[in-house]
Length: 170
Image (tube, rainbow, N blue to C red; front, side, top):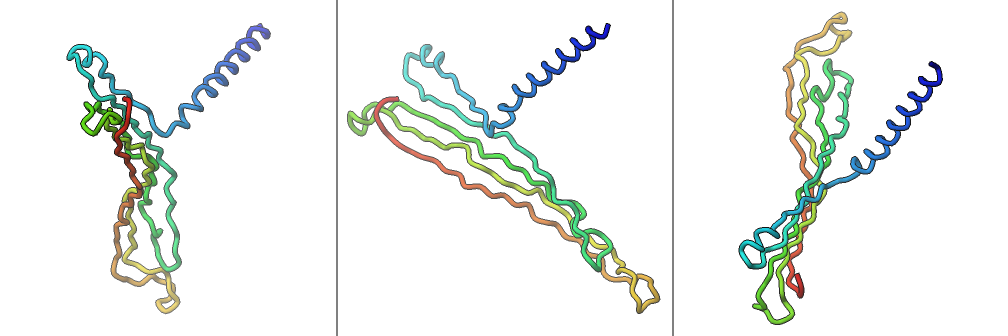
């Protein structure tokens, strides 16, 4: 009985380790290539069609900055923190045959727009109560003040690039 349990535990541990190793490279991928198959349409139409492919980015949410406590405020500075998100813009690669319009050395026109990094912050909210902290002037009681509320604007940062070119071959 004990040897069966030990063998079963060793097998389960080995399978879990193998699954963990197999899942690691997939989690490290930033974009998934998506081929666009046009071979069947080329054969059916009897003509050359563009070669096309795309890259779809995988979004990765980050950890939000927690609330910040500031002296003199009853509520934290960021009541609803901004959520960071790291991803990318989708990429594309398209090559179109060109029937020697620009000369014998130019057989295709191509557009290559690789997936580019994208950093974003979701909107956040900051608010303060209509009361101040306890003060010595009012015998340790809070005093009233105007309430405060604000929206932290969303942020988007990216630098997209693209290349347009003509050349020989497809």
